[in-house]
Amino acid sequence: MTDNIASSIQMEPSISSNISGEQPIWEAAELIYTVKEDEAGILLRTVLLSRLHMSRRLITRLKKLEHAITVNDARTYSHKPLEPGDIVRIRIAEPQLDTIEPEPIPIEVIFEDDDILVVHKPAGIVVHPTKGYSSGTLANGVVHYWRSRGEHTRFRPVHRLDQETSGVLVVAKHAFAHQQLSEQMKRNQMVKRYIAFTEGVPQPARGTVNAPIDRDADEPHMRIVTPTGYDSITHYAVVNAYGGIAAKVECELETGRTHQIRVHMQHLGCPLIGDKFYNPDSILSIPMTRHALHATYLSFDHPMSGERVVFTAPLPAELAQLEVTLNKRKEAYTE
Image (cartoon, rainbow, N blue to C red; front, side, top):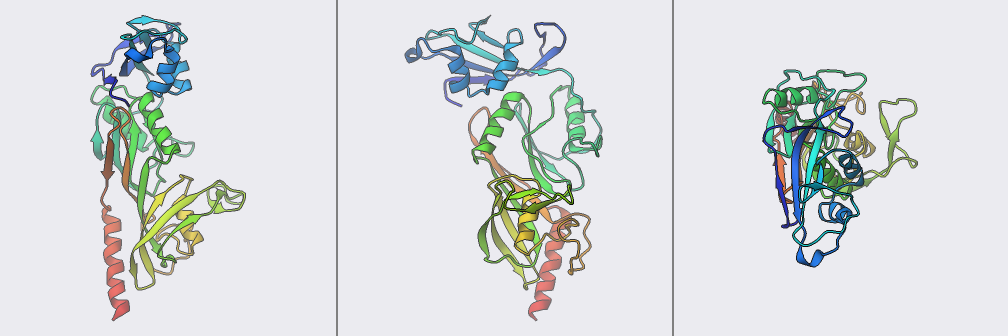
């Protein structure tokens, strides 16, 4: 976002109506852009696309709402030429009601402001309701957390974590924030790092797995490496090797396919410890309630200020104990 853009948040919900009057709107955020002296004649549409970096989809949706896009507090058409000093105001409007039911599920908040919520997702919980998980998800807990504070924010996860994967996850609190963060993901500007504990030690100790991934036709809930799959790239580095039997590995995603790290580590011959899908025949005999994968680091440009932000999450207790166990086995192995 440039210095010429002012952003402010409506701290109390402001209810208005759409053109047909069918659904109330909650104004979640506001953007303000003042036309510069050297921008005389610039089209409103150009300001929306090139200055405020709004998606065409969001623009189309907001154009249907009264007072969502105004110039000098008056509604106008998108091809209107603007003059220096004109004030373009965008009110990011949201449907008042969400289809996700609030449930009193505890959530661990790492950071929150008016634009984003960053949480430490525990293992064993699904991010968003699906056909097999209609309730008891992270989304249900977050919506309950917001409703309890009087916020009617929609749940907009920017990315996902597998059910048994723990760690840092960011949720956008309005459509513009979601759009900005999604674009960063597409441009590989969002950095996501994970800690994985693998059975076996990847060779070489540092490298990149560039292996396409697609759904397994025989086991649709699983993924496989296949030449006809989608481009999938994982960078990795061995942080610690435990006597050749296991390793602590840092992984950084360049792409974000379903089960990507789990599939790529299996592809290297070093599946994740505790992974019942990709390592069902483990010989380590270490009881686990989850697979050993944790999203430890997340970095991106804040969707409103443009400031680079970094969020981290320490290893949860079960993985910290796994590390202790592996260190003890390493010591026994080297004696």
